[in-house]
Length: 103
Image (cartoon, rainbow, N blue to C red):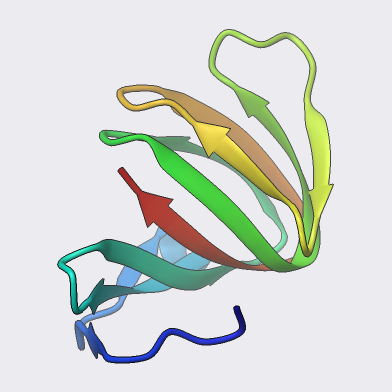
C-alpha cells in the first residue's frame, strides 16, 4: 500500500533527537494511530510503550532490539517488530523513511 486514505493528520510534528527524527501522527477512520516520518543518518535509542511494527519505505539501517546481542540490517521494503515497554538501538546509514504501526 503506497498511501493511507481517509485519515486525519495531527498538525504538530513529532521532533526527536534534535531533529534527527521527524514524524507526523495520522489517525485512521477506525481509530488506529500510526506515525509517518524520516530518520536522518545517526545512531539513536528509542523506547516503546506499545508494541510497534516499523515498516521501512526507503533507506537502510541496523537495529538491535533490547536483550539481543546482534544487530540486524534492514532496508526499504522490510519491517521489524518491537515489543511494548522495550527499546531498540537504530543506526541509520541512508535516510530512513518509515511508517510506525502501533499496537
